[in-house]
Length: 301
Image 1 (cartoon, helix red, strand yellow):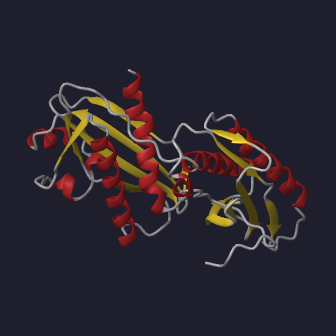
Image 2 (cartoon, one colour):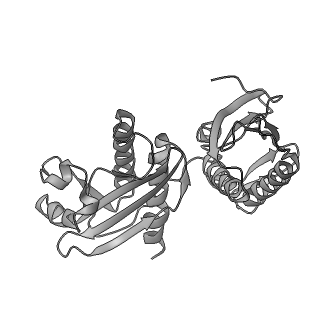
């Protein structure tokens, strides 16, 4: 990967500050993080004949305004001039439909880079930029503080849950079923199993004994709730089927449904809506969805 050069701007699809938490792993999750976000720079190397510099500057300004607002209104953060953590970035339009982003997080006091990453996103419209900003702000807010632990839920006994392998519903033009996809689906399943185990509410039931065709072919999402009967045979109280919906190489959705093993009725579920990122981000998106739309909902009940 080329070194980040602030003289050569860049921005794009956006898998942002996933490793920044390590730089603050000694800080309590409740501590307010102070940071500075410098204006990103922009460079158009797409070679398009029309001069779009005015439109790009307007979109870049709107992007920075929204990014700062999102972070400032999150009570875990405070924007402050001269803060030790400084976020800088650059955006580059590579072609008609593809833009890149390079983002750095610098610990000014220690004079070291704590994050340096490249992202891509498709499109050069107001909507594409707004979608990119929404992802960036969410990712930054999730990465600048140590990850929250799943909230334990006190129950008389943990729910026995059969978590089946996450399935891929691919509507993109990308090659499907590659070894990379298989690996990332397995990582996604494992991330969800660990999260639910750590919550204290669930006891994950092994699914190795499940030999039904829908399990082996990873088509439980199409079997009309047959996962409930399979879970019951495995001795589980509930079943969970998760699906990654790939829209394009850099856009996807995550959904899940939990059924009562005895009745087959859906007792919980969720959908992430459109998210940005390639397959290596599926596990993070799935864990976030489970935390937000299952564990945190249960904690409030």
